[in-house]
Image (cartoon, rainbow, N blue to C red; front, side, top):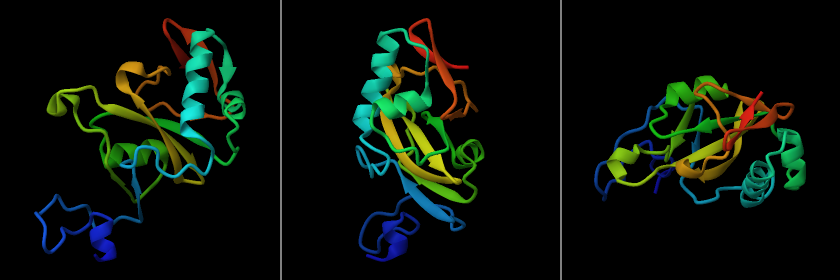
Length: 164
């Protein structure tokens, strides 16, 4: 298998044709593996820490959540990735020009079940790690276009944590 085939740019010669990715990718990030690489720390532990803060109706900084989950500080910001997010929109919010994204959340209408969402952590305009969540269990109220930094304070609002 060629590198282009493995990155999803070309269809394999012996398999069915697949949608071709743009050829102008500076790099590709894959949301496909259940947990992906975890250089910052355990995705599961961070997600559980977020859920715990919500359950306690805490006001807490994203940095404190990361430290409680024993995460590294090697990230600058976090963006939410919802179903039907397209490349241009994600690159704009994440400030990752030229990136291509594999396995973005599909439309839940097409799959018949709630889609997964992702908290994508970025450092120096490069994606580092993601944390998967079910849209129905999304504990952070993030509006489209919102970016969370380490210093962002999350306050309990309704049944979610809301960035201030």
